[in-house]
Length: 251
Image 1: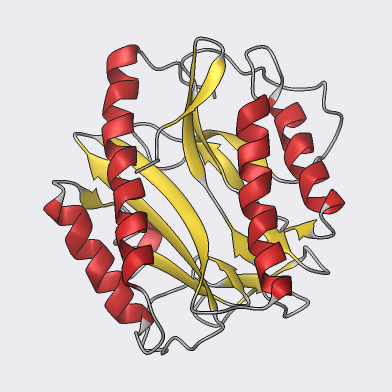
Image 2: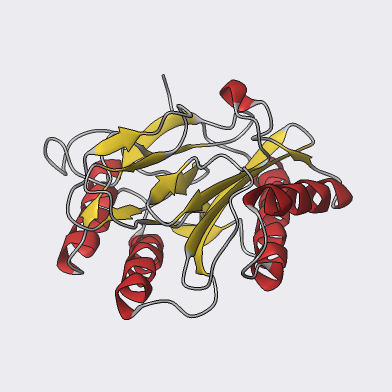
């Protein structure tokens, strides 16, 4: 399948959907504290997205029951909201999708709940740093596999490993589209499609401590590393405009 090239008016619509994601993440990050449940956070996020005029796009997507993926501690991605209570020292991933006027937004953060350990701070800094490092180095003509290598090298050089079998993705009038963008390289970086102006996609470094092999919990959604250690996830949606990546999901 060909990778879509978006026109300026489409990118503007994607940016509006993305900004609501960024605002919602900012809103939740300012509210979250020990004693809250994951279900309460999900309800707050759902309501806020709707107040902004968008629809939470994860609700019911592929059968997901929440509006916000709430990935706690060892869970890296796709955590299902439930009655688990947050404690001081937890780390929490928040992944939010929106749909507005037929276009989708998608981004994620991992945040501290109160004071966290230096190791957890480094873990979160790795996923965030890998994301921004990759975005800053995107240019027209580079291959997506070169982008993947940038992400993988950053994660490994920080002393961590990328989660396998899950990846970033194209986005537009569908929540997930071509291309798939893993955080680990398979094949050679000079192979495959090149990045072009008008492309819109999500980068999402998923960072584990010792093993990148995934394990799925009994809920059939929550993904963690087989090492059972804490993990971290960051994501932005970007558009390629005038040769460079522009972030669409900042508040």
